[in-house]
Length: 366
Ligand code: SF4
Image 1 (cartoon, protein in one colour):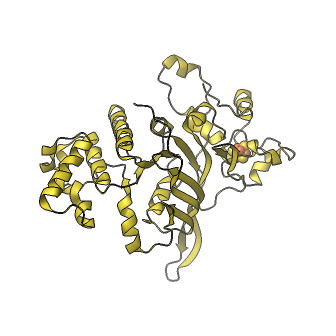
Image 2 (tube, protein in one colour; image 1 turned 90 degrees about the vertical axis):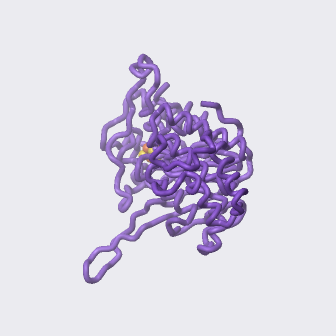
Image 3 (cartoon, protein in one colour; image 1 turned 30 degrees about the horizontal axis):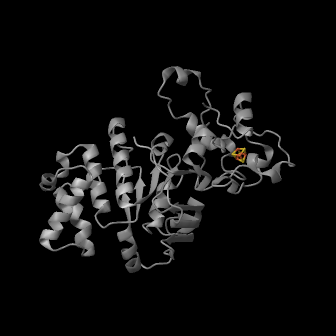
């Protein structure tokens, strides 16, 4: 895979305090609201022009809902989404139609996201027809051929059906469709998770090539830190509806600050079996708690090997620790230094190696 270069500095997307809550109802005859699912609970981040921001977390942490809320494919409960300098949070459906030309989505499943009854050329060209762009017959055909070539497929493949293609080729078709309207931002929701590892690298390379050629920005959603490592300039880590750490790629992999990020990194396999055998085992304990009743204080405290008494009482804010690096953890908050730092870990004390490395702000793995 090719290395990512430095990204531009101005923001194409700015998300501030985004909340997406789904009401829960009970009762058959008289339905009453009984709490809510806080899928996204106060998320803020930016994506710069020409940049890839990786958004990572376990299944159910709210990362896909964040992507859908940006496109208003799910209602926003609170917060602001600014795209290209304009607040689109309160746009009507017809106003969002224009925005959706410039923000496109690539989905995880290249099998389910393509209509099996349509020819590949028609699938790729459908957004052009819907938005009335390049619809004159010869221009339309030329554009389809150009898009197929752009994603590494042959022009004659326009006449075939999706079932005639491999998983990697189908994802290339999805990408061709997504870039057909010359968008500025792609929201890629687990776009390589369903592919074989060898094919993943090819599709990741395609994303990088298209970024360079078309100046695209990506919000790249994944559950796997191994995938976003090769494609992201910066990475935001989500846990239970919140962002717990944002950092440039190199900093995050070399010295993750948040214990959750450290646990995710510890789960990434090292290609060398000898190095894999030597590294300390520090996986994340237990299952994620309910988003209906998240734990008090720090939401990660029931699973955190570094948890202190204060962690169950005070909710840590996402704070900038150094330029470009932010984390939501009391271990990195000077205001907590004077408070009670007694260990609190219902799942057991951490190993001394893991504890000392975390307190130095260093990763527990090589
Ligand atoms: Fe762990 Fe406490 Fe930091 Fe939360 S605030 S991640 S419980 S040390």
